[in-house]
Image (cartoon, rainbow, N blue to C red; front, side, top):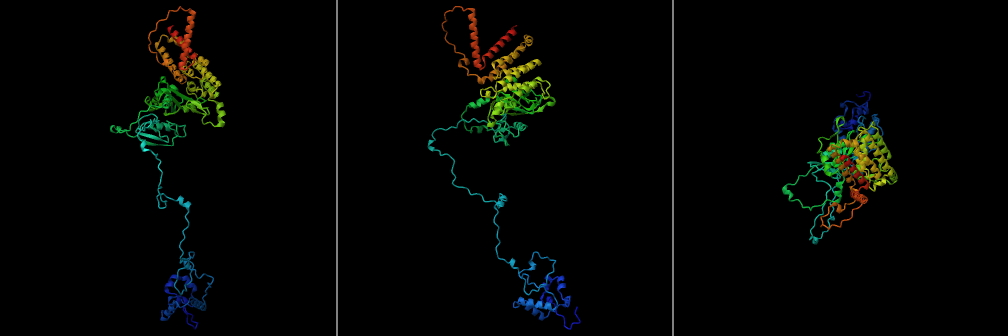
Length: 615
């Protein structure tokens, strides 16, 4: 709209004179146009100056390089002041800054009209020719982020040359003598057989680090031991870290057997033969509470006459422990039991107390530690040892001894009290006493760990147990306890003589069985079994047999008969007979490693038995 009162014609706005349509459409907004437009300037597009040659000439002059920026700035500022347009002084602003490239600039803020007389150039901050700087490498972070096989993995180390050979320097000129490898006795069975039961299996479990191979049955039995924190090898008792299943190698064919290397025959070492003579110990887990040693032997199919012995363990209150032990005379018998050749199913007991049990190999130290739990030291086989006991604990271990007297007194109370709360079978305390008598260490080194007081108390408990059993009428258990007590070498000769009185058959039993030959044969078999057991237990302490006793003398040439001597008197004959009998008894005692009084007691018992049988 034009002012009609003013005699002067309207002057075009500087924005319409110096701004091109491209710049106006890009950098101008309606708000800017409404803010900086003069009241005298029309707001319609028709108010702009017409496109005349004069206007084009002015534009070419404004964009020409001869026109300075300072003159243009002063001209439009003067024209703005003439038209009443307020323009802020931007001398305090940075002339090099550019608002269009500011990241913090808001697009909602109205922009000033671009009164530019030169084309827009790039900011100096973005036209820097400096190269980018890479930060130093973080070695700690690179070590954590390193991935094997990726592009960031370090290169493989170069192979080191010049390695020295570890082979010995062999002189080829000394290769004239024949060489043979020394015989090697392997302590393990073949890889196709189980190391525990020696059964052939197609799949075995190889234990680590002892490298023993077990069949699936023996491996399951070893895993079912509940009182062990870690799995132990049933052969060497070493701790097992892991195991893996392997297949047994196939046996060589007939053609391949001819290509096998020849090995010279090797004789077994003395240590291996001595180890075979020791009884093999097996462990039975998850046994019933009312189980007895005869029931265990019957379950395993081992006759008592074979020398096997079962041990059922009790605590001080009479509770039956969940595991028991069995001693077998040979390795072949132990493997036969582990294979289950004489039992139908692995279920021990009858009725509601029948349980599935597992059999594993054990050792003499484990058996001794179970029978004598109060011993503070260790066991070297059946003998107690102070290995592993700290020096400050040595006086306490020696003072405590092999057993405490309270253990024997508690056991005697359990034997006398038939209504004990935790005793599930009345015969279990007596079998526990038999186990103590059978495994009581009596060698010279073991006598240091028990004294005469413990020995006398053990004798008193055994004597009282026999009296209790005789009062109850259990003759089979009386013979078991007496036979085991007579085999204990810890007792003195007087104590053995007192126990041997209970081994005599009762008068009623002898009279009733005098007419029965089967009863006499059974008593004779029991006596021979007891005699063989005593001989086996005392074999280690007997002196070596003389050759003249071991073999009969060769027949010699007949010698001339001596002249007849005068007949001796009757008293002299009796004296000579007694002396001859004494010499024979001394020789027998020396040969079997027992006391002479024990031989005399056995001869007296045999004489009494023959006299009663003849009567």
